[in-house]
Image 1 (tube, rainbow, N blue to C red):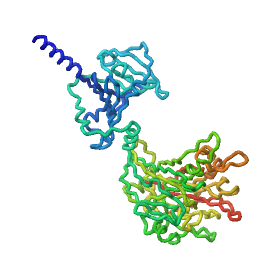
Image 2: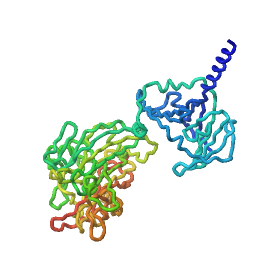
Image 3: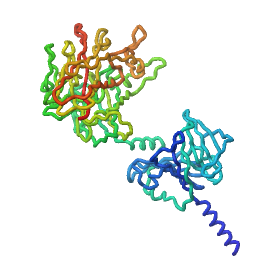
Image 4: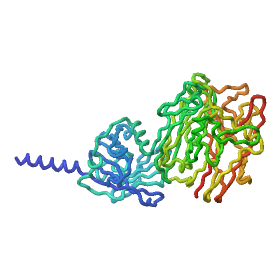
Length: 554
């Protein structure tokens, strides 16, 4: 009887010891200075499992998404829990990575919170990582999975300057983890887990998914996508959420050839509808219903400049398709493995004032005469960020000479063939501070004397005074050879896609220039752009696609 009671007592003691949990708080520092207002790492550790979280998660005050890691012992399996939004939890497991860790153990020692610690060192992605661990508590754990096979990690230091150090350690009766992980979880593979967790950190507006942009009288609009100009323009109405000053906006287009072998002008744009007339009217009723611009050469250029009752399209991103990417990857060359998709991605945060809270037509144009054409997918993403580069609160469209309705009769931008170039008058109702011109320019004329291959100075005039001039030119086109399987090879050993061009390359984006205009007073102003456009030779001619919007704050 006594023997049985003693056995039960010692069993009870062993269970108590087995279940003893410690809570450790870790504090971050840099060059010995503690980082202010930090969200401390919290670790709950016992002999069977560790939980790694932070103080806001512990207090259930953390914003979504957030993540908790659990390490099961003795298998050293990492269970990751991703809290994407209220009621939606995903999880994945990793039983391999801890066992693959490798450390060099040194003779150095020090005390942390009164515990004797030893040092171990490893290298991760060119970073030197030092861990300080103790065996005094006969436990294994730490603020990450790093080094926990050695003991209880009380400090991790990276490159001798960035440290995460235990600043408190106490016994607790109960962690309360069951109050946090309190919903069923969906278990998925590790890569899918990382992808879903990453995507939950920002807002994605899906615009197009594998849509065809081609030239065909069979291209018709449907309930989701509108198609114009024989299918070379696609449009979709997109509702943007309210976007705060601390959020950044990115646009991403993925493009492949679906039959067209050539490099083509492409643009992603939106249609302002603040005036009585818009570019959308021209799409539905014909380009000649839009305001005409004349420079004295006898031609009319429809819908390219802002007027009292009309604003041109705003260019989100100018891109150029590569020569036949993906569709023509069967054209093999030795030691060349062709890319299968052209990824175009650009920060467009400066256009936020025209997007935030608005429902607008977003479109993509690729100039081509091919029935197969091109395949595109387009996303717009909105990210919380501490980086604030653009603080403008105003976007005023001024001009866009890209003939988006080319296949519906809109003429090429040849208006730079005389000294007037393009001239826009605009009226400011209020003073505009820190004004900038967001200016995109590319030269075209695809023969040896065309402006595509001849550097030409662009000059910008504000109120008849030259304020900026430069020669837009790209010399890096050869860097994108692997995106251009159908690019022809010349006797001199170059490919067509290698050649330097007037501010563009096949398979690339053309970045905007931000031209400082200073503070502008309320009232009427003019912006003029002059370019010495090359002369026509036979049926060959040059043209310049330029777009400009005015940025600033009232």
